[in-house]
Image (cartoon, rainbow, N blue to C red):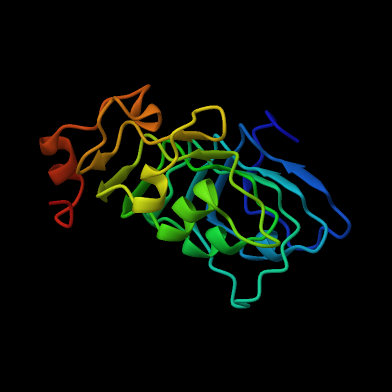
Length: 187
């Protein structure tokens, strides 16, 4: 259902759905929490819409089937959704080109470096083009092999993201003035 100029919100009743691609439409509002806890949904692509936020699932036990989530190129504000770092099968996450701010959750970094038992490693962690600030989490700094995971952090407000780290390539950090104009929380 991509590229159809669909407007409004996403319907709640989508049983047995495995792939949902509503990219390149005119969808607004919040990304529904039910999509992250859907029992059969494996791929979710809502990129290139006009979503402004992400609803947090009430149930902290995420038995999510999601493997790939793409919410890039929207207008989503707020902190990066921490619950996403706890989705056991998720290996691809694209949140680029939104208005996310705050620090990168440590759980995201752990998933890119050493996920643990029964949890998939992030193969793609794309966070560039937001307003993320602060230091890069320690576990992410241990990822040395660019072939093991694709990480993009360019175009943010990160404290230090030197180009020598492969995940800082492909985009300079935003200027201090642009970061401070975005919000008073950015140092």
